[in-house]
Image (cartoon, rainbow, N blue to C red; front, side, top):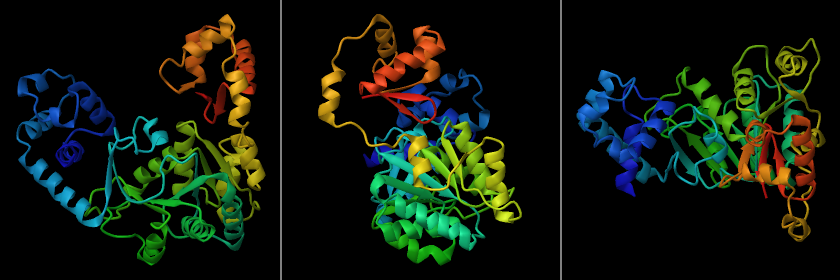
Length: 366
């Protein structure tokens, strides 16, 4: 396994190869190791392959040396490398085209928890924001949820600390390597989080918390979550970037409203006003929008799950194939049914416990 991991790390170091093209490259060649076994002539035939990339693949000594060094750091510090093909890789994040090929994780929380909520906001949190954030986290105790944030000052810190106190697993997504905690003031908190949560990053060891890393970090926060909740934010900042990313990934976004005069409510009010976020006042709003009402018992589902399907229902179920989840767009195209008719059929299947409606206009087979 160590042998394969070194090649998987090495893929992320190839110049001219990003997350999207890298995953396509792995699929094209079969696995990470096979990429480095390709002949130059074969590489030159690949459309869009840059000369610098071909040169690096044909003479990968430096790349492999750096990958081996990273492997030593991983083993020494108890870090779990999660290549995108690893079953422990966050499956929600994997739905995003630009998801990282490799993640580095130190912790024990399930990154594929039944429900994942991201809580973000300003570094300059007010007493109002602290109250909203703390109350929300406390109310999430019984929801089997993982809380994700960025371990920054302000809202992130309150979200993580409140989760630790409430016994809710919480993961901080970093914009730097795991050789350090940034900001340093949260080092003690980061240690506490690892007892029932963890730290996650796409950055290799030695990567510093430079400004350009944080927008990329924000896409991981948005992509990992079912819902992104903005507690407080000015009109500009990382929280609004995260909200925009979440919307682009078809995640549900929520924002706490505030007084129009308050600087750090302007961003939230803007998101609500422009229909980029649902207004949230308490946990009940989140439960309702996310359809977190208690599910039917397994015994109740078994009475209906094997019922006979109509011809139109069969067309819907055929769209799932070997997949457990499909989008509404896929169902519209695959069945050829009018949207209103399809919606009615899906509702009946949902009532019978055969499919579940998920955020982002997706459906999961039970």
